[in-house]
Amino acid sequence: MSEQDHLTDRYLPDFENRIDLTVLQHKLDAVRQEIKKVIVGQDRVINMLLISILAGGHSLIEGLPGVAKTLTAKLIAKTINSDFKRIQFTPDLMPSDVTGSSILDLKTNEFEFRKGPIFGNIILIDEINRAPAKTQASLFECMSEEQVTVDGHTYKMTSPFIVFATQNPIEHEGTYRLPEAQLDRFLFKVDVLYPEFEQELNILKEHHLQRAGNKEDLVQAVLSKEEVIHFQHLVKLVYVHDDVLQYIAQIVVQTRSNPNLSLGASPRASIALLEASKAFAALQGRDFVTPEDVKYVASPILGHRVQLTPEKEMEGFSADYIIRQLVESVEIPR
Image (cartoon, rainbow, N blue to C red; front, side, top):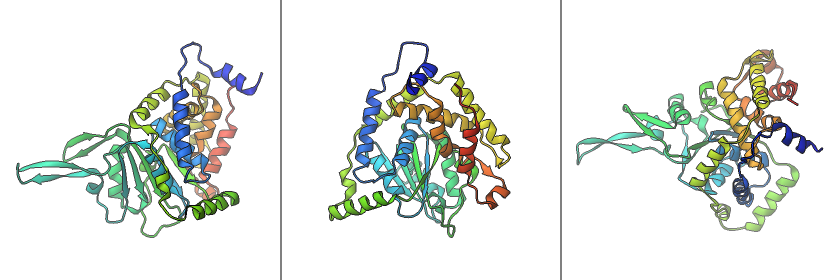
């Protein structure tokens, strides 16, 4: 018996009504192909952002300047026929510039709410850490509850509602560090790394061959927002064995007692692990979750939710390294 057959037998639901994920897998593969018309490599980054969409979560994309953070997020949004908004965060940006504000209509002598750019389906917030804390705080309610309250009135966001935010990890002048409460609202913190030599060479070749024209125009919409909502519903139905639930709980609980961490993950992290694992399983065409799915999404989910002890920080350790060690130390259910 192969390892895949063993996983299927071990974690398969004990009923015959299976979820047909063929269309989901086909459509998301088409999204990948469209993005790869422009983006070279970065398969894991693209995977994480697609998982984020399927799980209905938000993603913080972090990387050095020039590694196509913003471009990747824009292209993913372009493959979906939905309402896309981009907000450039700057030090002088006010909360009302994001959420909208009430404006006096001189004809009716009544206040009318003018929606801000946060009202959309896919929102790209570029350089999120360049706006001050009060502007960052304007995202708290909409990212966690999908609503905005202005002047005592609550306005619901339309589905799907996904936020992609970018930030540069090396610049500190003129930036405002995201508070832990804000970070916790992101399903993933995705690190975008430099490309390998072959990928760098391919980037140069493709750029040289294009010569003129906007390369973003090569990407077409292959997915509707109604399909996204339907796929998000299908992901909710993916089966999770009790042993996998225990595995997730053990990982999260161990972050709270790990001697290398001064702050562990909250129950929100447990739910994030569950939902992201289900989305990753669906992305591969499976209607059940395995421990390998949990391991795949663990680091980008937990890395920004925990804090290293001062000693480990001084020794140069990263939260991702500690999380990978911790996950490997937890026994996989057999």
